Length: 107
Image 1: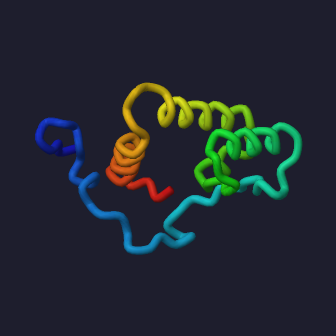
Image 2: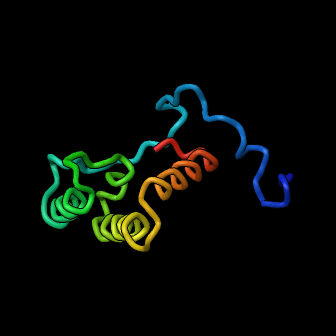
């Protein structure tokens, strides 16, 4: 793999994402929607609403819904990354979005 400027970035990382992803371009993962969640999964969705401050649950969170303990850990990691420390949240979110773009993550 070729690297760019010695930083370990592949040429692929600099390509823009496809104009529009289709179901054929992406893997399908069964999830439990928030409205249909019960037990621990429902509790973790409630926790996400509390720490996120919004009623909407992002699809990236829903990907973990069949394993609520993993979903809780992922939410906690996000919470720590966004809220701990002295750096304001907007630069943190910009950095996270930039990394997602480089990794061709469309969530």
